[in-house]
Image (cartoon, rainbow, N blue to C red; front, side):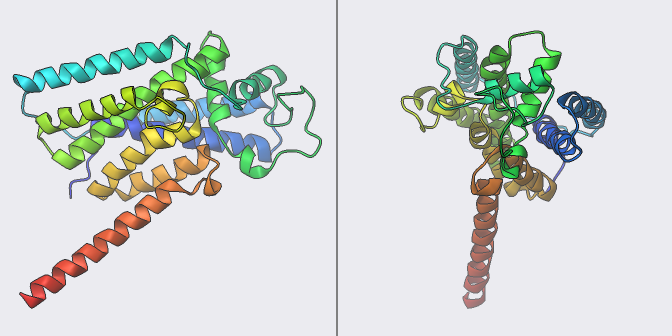
Amino acid sequence: MENKLTRADKILIGFLLIIGLSEVANLVAIVLHKPFSAGIRLFIAACVILMIAVIFLPAKETHRIALTGQGKIVHLAFIALFLLQLLYILQGKNVYDGGDLTVETVNTMLTTDTIYQINPLTGQAFAQGMPMRLKIISLPMLYAFLCRVIPLESYFIIQQLVPAIVLALAYFAYSALAEALFAEDTWKQSVFLLCVAILISFGDYMYGMEGFGVLHAGYRGATIRMAVIVPYLFSLLIRRNRIGIVLCILAEACIVWTFYGMGACVLITFFYVACGRIWRKLSERRKGHG
């Protein structure tokens, strides 16, 4: 099966690699007992190299059939829903941060030039330190980097700007999945994306529903996994892109504290491969009996 990268692949793989680079910078600073500023310098250098590499990666040229009539209406409806969701997030009036210390943790990194050494609630040093499993979560490092380079308030960057980016990445991921499922059929791809947008828009009526995390807490690791990594993982499994699959698994480990990070992506990959092998064996038996 063709494994060339599409433009959506380049964006999403770049995003997964940025998560990985923030993890490397985070761990190096922690293990070597370096300040936050040293980790940021390492992260910036790595990101520059990554940007250059991703830009020059060859992209797959797709020759799509132009949408006509109803297809254009469906595509415009999807774009309209996406823009409404974007505005909804950027207004920042519906942020759900119950029990979340992301903003406080990032502000502590910025003001004290330390990484996971100061309790963001008390402003005092941790008496017994933090578990390593918590320290390797790299999103605070990534968000602190954004707060350092973007001259805006940290709460706006974390609770509004980042979720807006995650929303866009989610649709890139679902676009990649739609293309993997429906090849060059742009009509089915547009309908698929519109259905996803509808589910997100009307699936946020209570905590834990489909669209709640995307529209109310897009900065959380669990939301990024659900909205971006998992749908992209399915597209990679369909295309048998092993490198991309590994990147998804590792990215989840860097941002989510669930089953020690190696949760959903590993299970999805295992069951997808297992079901594929079972199906092939059943098909071979049917052919043998035929």
